[in-house]
Length: 165
Image 1 (cartoon, helix red, strand yellow):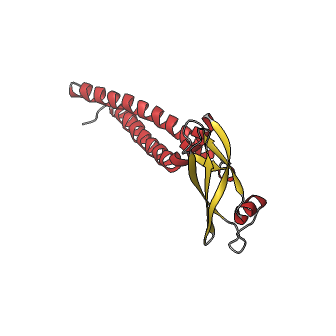
Image 2 (spheres, rainbow, N blue to C red):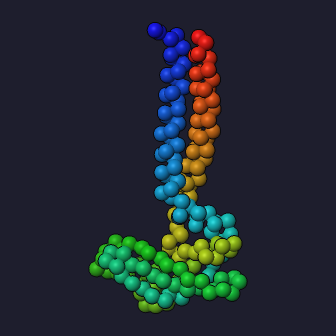
Image 3 (tube, rainbow, N blue to C red):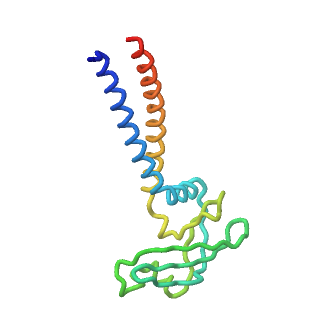
């Protein structure tokens, strides 16, 4: 038997399916960028600068790892690691900034004043794209989830009305 309200049901179910896909994509993007986004956001809220001392420099194929220590504004000794990819594996010291690291000198550090354990070498703190992708994904996910709840209530209302149609 033909239901004249079938178009309304299709409209509601299509919106629910689209919102679930959007919500899933936003969750994937947010999960992908959460670590760097939170670090960037915390440092952006209360940035503090320090000079760290390089403890070790280890080459891992094309990647290199610099471990450094620094003293925060409270006087506590903190440790951090900078893992980066070199464009040329044969030349570990490919820039002036890393030349100092290879020679065992100091390195510039930026850290969050509220949470000093969140720290980055200045060269590793250049990108804010992860922060904006994370923030956008969370906002879109909240909007999609809210709209999904509205559509679920509309589907429930449609189902109740369909019993007596």
